[in-house]
Image (cartoon, rainbow, N blue to C red; front, side, top):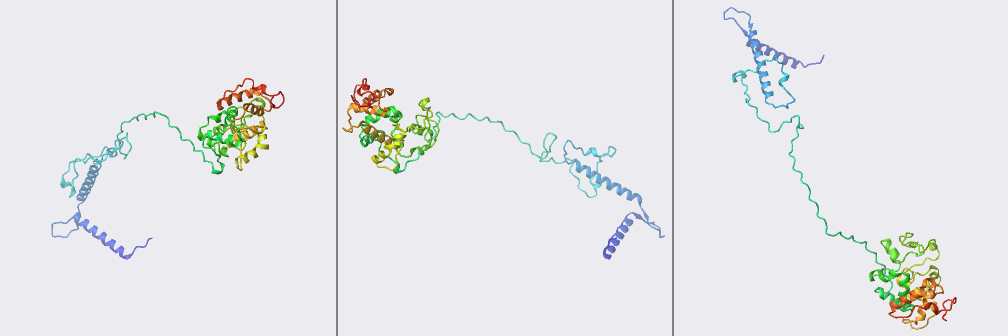
Length: 371
């Protein structure tokens, strides 16, 4: 049994005694006679007070519940038995000091949700749908900005301020008329003659094939082998194709490997003319793809092949044709090459030499010996 302190027990006994005494004094009565008799408890008063208290409590409970506007799905009145007595009209005196509640309950400021709305969430009015207007169409498509081409270092640059200037410098360096160089370039690398000065300067710097930003720049600079149409192995975009093979016979050619505006064969370049071009230009590195290197190296080949010792600026016409004969390998019948170079030279030198019988200028089978 749980221990209770003696003082707490005494206090509880005293409180119970007072409560019982008060109950007996309120609901007991004594005889009006002088003879002492035992007090009688008024049972009817007790019953009446309990009934009145129960009735008052029930009335206040119902009034409080009615002041609350419950959702339509919930009905508090349905919880009250049908046999329960209806609410009675009571006066203020019946509440024994209690304050009467207002007969009309105040309307709540927050809307009570119904079965069609989410509980406790405010409703929102939908705004009208606004269709976006069609964006304006630009009048012209903007041109994307091209990636800038890296600038060559000073040691890789060759002399020359324009395309014409480069041909002039090459002719003076190799002692060959610039018009004769143009005559051959028009046949071997015709796109060179259409370079802008900006493009000419780009291709006139060593190692430009590693500064390109797209394959077409390699193709335009004649950095591919015309025999196979493939870009050189030491270049950016190596092995990609610029053009189809020159012919079915050259499609698998791995020996010729011509490069540059003048299409010098690799064998002749590496054997003799690469070193002579270095000496003529006084540089450490030369390449057939560099415009000035190609023109100077090709000019040296023509000069030595024709054995011409006259004026550098104005060759005798027969040596112009001999240069064409030498470049074909010893005869003019190859693709009517001598006739073509003659026509090109007349154009760039502003001359009017006869080109019809140039093939008959040489002893047949003599490797370009004059008759």
